[in-house]
Length: 113
Length: 112
Image 1 (tube, each protein chain N blue to C red):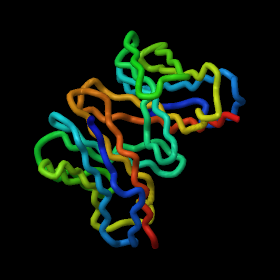
Image 2 (cartoon, helix red, strand yellow; image 1 turned 180 degrees about the vertical axis):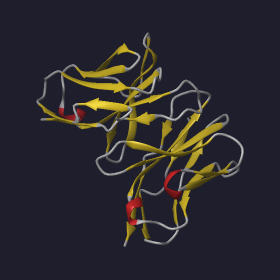
Image 3 (spheres, rainbow over the protein chains, first blue to last red; image 1 turned 45 degrees about the vertical axis):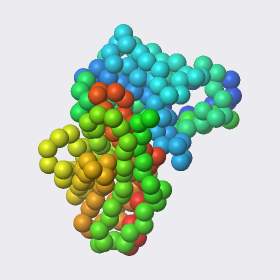
Image 4 (cartoon, chains in turn green, yellow; image 1 turned 60 degrees about the horizontal axis):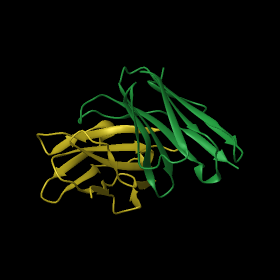
């Protein structure tokens, strides 16, 4: 079984709808991250959480919110989706050290019409 | 500002030839450097990292990277490219337990 899972894997929605993307991990890591990937823009950090009670905004948090329900679960919500939020979204986890590797989920491809 | 640059958007190489994917960085402090690969329709997979010690780091799938402090570079290399190496490659750097800073990625195409 994959260590980091994301649901759904693909989602098509309409402008104005609320969408939740879910991430679960079995690596026992405290740190979790949400990124979006757009062609030519690389990976951009949306939110990150260093533990259940610690949530921080990343570079591009506007229009997004997150919930850390447990150590293993970190959800990303789009309160009112807009077309420029069409992107590939990745969840990642890591240990607490600067030298720790981030492990990524398979991604969610979101299309907002 | 701290940054990572991958100066080539795309690299093309013939199968069997050596490949290099370039990465340079600009940070204050000691960097920890990472390479990831993304195959089509997949998430990012960790390839290798430099923490300290030997400047030549060996990783997965026959890849290696050389840390060069004076040139602030961490180029990814492989002696003999495979068609299956065709993918998107990302370089990233972290300093002092802050967030990872990502390059924009380099698309590697290995031609048969």
